[in-house]
Amino acid sequence: MTKMKHSLFQLMGIVCFFFTLQRAQAQENTTEASAQVKNLKLISETSDGKGHITRVIQYSKGNIRITETIFITKGPSIAELKMPIKADTLVKSLLEIIVNKSSYRVGLYYRKRLIRSYKAVFGPNPQFNKVMEGDRNTPEGTFTITNKNGASQYNKFMLLSYPNPDAYQRFNSLKQKGKIPATAKIGGSVGIHGIWRGGDDMIEMGVGWTDGCVALKNNDVEELFSFVGIGTKVTISR
Image (cartoon, rainbow, N blue to C red):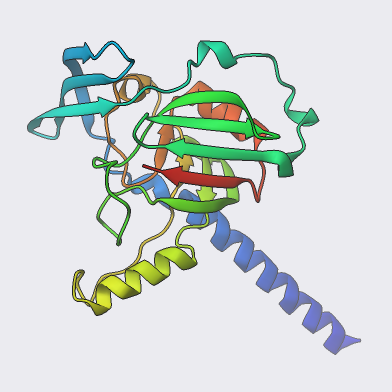
């Protein structure tokens, strides 16, 4: 009996350890490079008449004043997709998140029908796929939500299953070809999250402030967080 109790306590300890580790991974995002961004200003904005926007903005990061040009392709109208939805009536397995970096949008689909579209921002170079730790690029591919943290520094945080097998294959291939350093690491702790209080303008303007995560306005990330579950499919494309 004593041995059985000892084994049981060991098992419980292992389960608690992995649960704690998983939560810690979901909270590792607190090092996002953007917390110092301030004094955001719109310099100019033009449209080609088809909904595609070219926007020039400026902001301060530390002692540096940065000018950034953002190209945004047309995405679904958010106003058209605000029909009432009760989160507890959704079958979680029928939900899918589609992230389009070119349109700066996160779409939520239910039974293959678009039910929500949110403005989003990414790493500073959304036109590039993530290659390794530290490149601040947002990964492309198909992932799942592996953990949800409702107490993140960035409001809500949904951890993605990056790196996945495709990412590992690409990473190892690039390393073997000498295109990335032999000491490079693949990185991780990529997810969908909100922003610091009062930071929604960063999302509205399209500032690429994250270290590779997908960031939404706080009200939007709270709503998305209430809809999705562990295992929800997430596809990220350019």
